[in-house]
Amino acid sequence: MSIAVSSEVKRDSAYAHQFSLYNQLNFQITLGTPMVLYAKSLGASSTTIGIVAALAPLLTVLQLPTAYFIPKIGYKQFVLLGWFSRTLTVFSFALLPLVTAFDNATKISLMLMALFIFNVLRGISTGAWLPWLTSLVPEERRGHFLRKDQTYVQIGGLLALALSSVVLWSSGKPWHFSILFFLSACAATLSLFFIRLVPDVEVGDQVKTSGQPVPWAAMLKYPPFTKLLIFTVVYNWVIGGLGAFIVGFLQNVGGFSDGMILGCNMFAFVGAAISVPLVAGLMDRTGTKPILRIALVCYLWTVICWLLISSGLLNTTPVMVVLIYFILGVAGGLFGIANTRIAMDTMPLMGRNHFFALFTVFTSMSLGLAPICWGIFLDSVGHAQFELGIFQVNRYSLYFLMLTVLVGVTFVLAHPLVEKRGEPLPLAVRDAVIYARLRLFARLLNR
Image 1: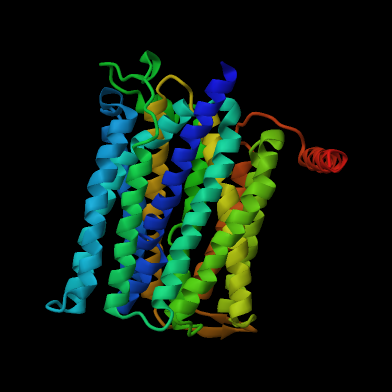
Image 2: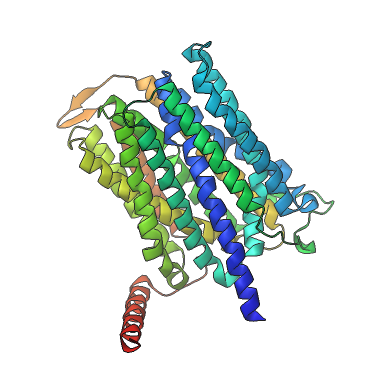
């Protein structure tokens, strides 16, 4: 019986991984660097770019009122309704660049309107996704599942940027963007096909919403939840809009073309795809916090490099930019899997839907407000700059300096996080190396 159950879990996990791959392919084009490049081609300001980056996380607040309806409708049905509606919306992006009757300002407004609708539908439906996965994947398999799922996500992102680089390498003409957005819509359709194959799970009585008011204040005072929430909110002020503003920096200061930016950006997904299987496997042994600290060290290195480049102390060479993107991908991949795992461990069974909704809403609000505020800051400073010794002080150097300080704060906030204990990191690395050598020796004997 256990073999049959294990086989079903693996099959269901495979469907979820396929969904993650195509969903990321769609997401990375529609809400990632290609959309930022399209907005820049229309003459969008830093504040507008910040809004483009902010819409997805800000509209996740819709999970809060919809958490009440999830147990009544069911996890799968709730996600399917949202994903089907937003897939229809994605096809409108393919038509927008081809419209010649509107000027660029009107196209920017229409682009923001379409992104708003897309993210409203996404925000409503994603509230059921994490509770669905938490109920579907057994606790002992979550580390393995998240590690593999993160790999599929990075592969999807890599494919998205590879397609974008090919389409936009020579130039970013309107019909190039139209082709790219159409491919994104096709990927969304494929993701919808695979999510339909993932089985639904019964919402137990312990997680169903009762007629009693939800004790939001008491939930916010739950100590493990509060610590995780504060840590994630501060972290989001580091990464909120970072990818979008790096694009602006490379265009305005580095003189990089659209194709070069996308080509360099690909290495972020290479870094994540390589690092997650190699390093995140230690998470089941060490616990979550050592992996979080590794990710934060990588983030600190990258923002310091951007600070030195924007201050004129390092050259903006393609090799240097590729290396920074690679380390940034390592940081993002490891942080994503570790933060999701610690969130699953932190949320109590009673009221899990509402805890996930509250966590997602607060963190997404910070992730949405950050790029808008950073965009306003960059536009306010403008092109003003001056010399301070060997440093060039400008809007980007000030921006990366503040990010460096915030990464330091996240190190402090990571210490009190509550997690399930594992081995110390050096012992876990030693055990992993010994285990790998034993497996190799066994293979040699069996030849």
